[in-house]
Picture 1 (cartoon, rainbow, N blue to C red):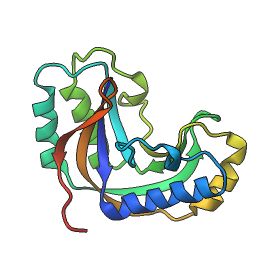
Picture 2: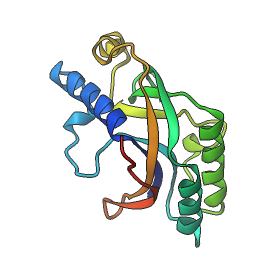
Picture 3: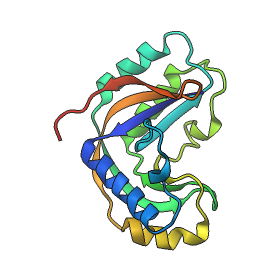
Picture 4: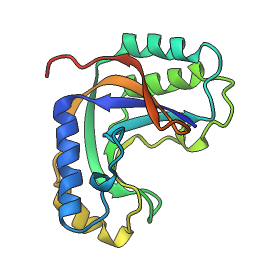
Amino acid sequence: MRTVELLCCPALERTVRAAWDRLAGAGLPSLARHGHPTNRPHLTLAAVEAFPPGAVDRLAGLFDAALPLPVRLERVTVLDGSAPLVWLVRPTAELTALHRAVWSALDGAQGQRAWHAPGRWVPHLSLALRFRDHDRRRARALVGGDRPEGRFVAARSYDGETRAVHPLGGGFPGD
């Protein structure tokens, strides 16, 4: 599987990692416990079995033109009642247009994950992968009611077979 992901600016990444740490410190599930070196806050735009020919160049062009992209986080919730604990991302017109363009760039890819498709996609940054809905109130209190803002500044792809990441565009301008 190959993903297409947006990465946060350093300040927003620190904010999300601090939330991961508060959850873990309280004994709740948290991505702070996921020790793989590729683990970092990100927004997944798409996931496919493999990129079609030319997709990497098309994606790089999209991200070089669109990034950095302002982002604002919204409320913390549990998707589907007993699944990931997430910090929802406000779906701005620019983000939604970029998401649609990514799907166009991946047209013809095998194994497109439907839950990322335009019209079904719920933009979010994950805080924990397996979370019980009844702990949501406690998690919200730990994460806080802030609505942090920042930017998406880079894009990458995670290769599930090799467990490696590959840059797709953007960069990390000064904070």
